[in-house]
Image (tube, rainbow, N blue to C red):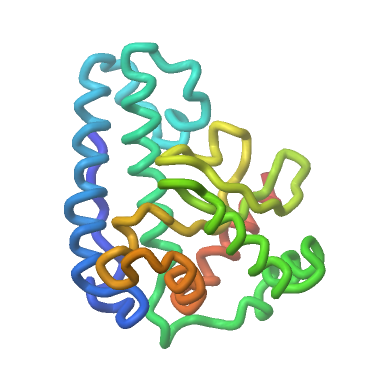
Length: 206
């Protein structure tokens, strides 16, 4: 049985960028629903219950057809949100990305950190409806910006996720209303570069 993880910080720790009310709604209700629905889907196939979340999400087409969509949506929601909570940190703890290997790799891949920010922001803004924008390592060990619809994950495409932003409206609407760009711009102020860099290091060591 999959379980809802605790947040690695208090619900109000990301204020004023992410408000406390949104964190309660996002974590306690939305993420919990994904966990509940994933567990319910897997009840029909006990042999799958011993698989890790990464294993389930890495080959969606291999899953039984009767639960494939439910696992894609809810397993993806569980994976994406576990990733998101760890990726954020209180603003006072945010470090300079250029102090990390990932910061230097971003400059090498995109020409400058500002170019990367522009490309990532464009991916987040161009996602119609709900989904995520990602910085990933592709199969050629290169950094790439992609976006995914709904709760799809990069895993099924063979990508290793390094960084993400959730652009579902429930992630920002209480504070930012329909001003997605304002939310995306503010999101950079709560990024946990230790976590992002660790993701990159592991991806390059595979």
